[in-house]
Length: 370
Ligand code: FES
Ligand SMILES: [Fe+2]
Image 1 (cartoon, rainbow, N blue to C red):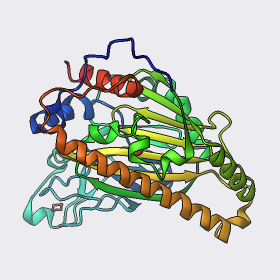
Image 2 (tube, rainbow, N blue to C red):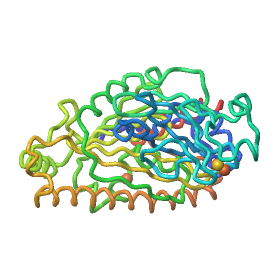
Image 3 (tube, rainbow, N blue to C red):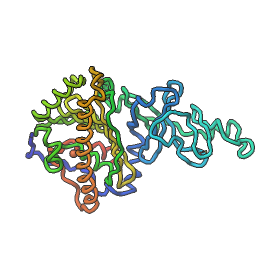
Image 4 (cartoon, helix red, strand yellow):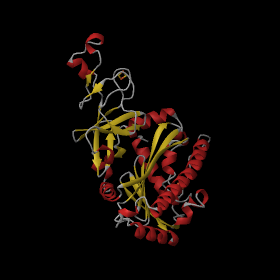
């Protein structure tokens, strides 16, 4: 593990109250979450006419819908009396409010209002004034992003070189084997920080993550984003080589270690031996809670006969179980850190072994205007 103990530690560290203060969370919404391209889901769920996905971006419910092949994003809140319109994370159907049945068209205008003539008397102009606010939507590969506030850099500019990374991953990792949303009693930044360093691995994950990695890592940076690479243990490489051959799984030609990418502000992508992709977002619910939304993907097998077979099932169970264990270990320490951070009088002291956290704090404080 490289050490840089002679250099002074950075002083630009997020102050403790930023991890629990509701006023700071309001500023984060305005300065970070509304102005960034936020990852909301995969184009896989938006392939057909009227397919939709929903997402919550720091307190704003959003729907993305396929209208005759074109993706459009709207506020997922009915302009009649405020019900959510689409209730499910994904599905197929026109935007019809479940409460009183208002129907919205591809411009977000309520074109179907039951009893309009008797109860409201809205003409076309009045209906247009009740249109759902529309948001920008853009895709890179199969990754779909929404930005709440218009203006600022385009998605490709925000991603920089990581745009090509998303293209590469989109082409490779097409079979989803798990997905879940887990409530964490922790600020979203505490969640993010738990995946930006491997310093915690020995103490937090002695039976899991520690067993499959070596103590060798390096980091790289791209705009507000970062990458950390950790070498896999010999036993882990052997296991993956066997699994990949047996199940005909493709692997990335570019990434063969444990390669972890962070895309500011809250998207984390981990690749294991180039054969497994984990995609995580730490979605803020309020200043003190977040929802960890994770998905696991494998590549398309060249041996389709193995799908549903005992070996494939055992491997998938193993990967799902391992992921669940590691995430629960991270949740426990993140919730402990969140609770304790509220009592800290001085800022945290991330060491050089936590250099990606420095980069995250730097990007965050710059966005917050500090
Ligand atoms: S709240 Fe949506 S139709 Fe009434
Ligand atoms: Fe961890």
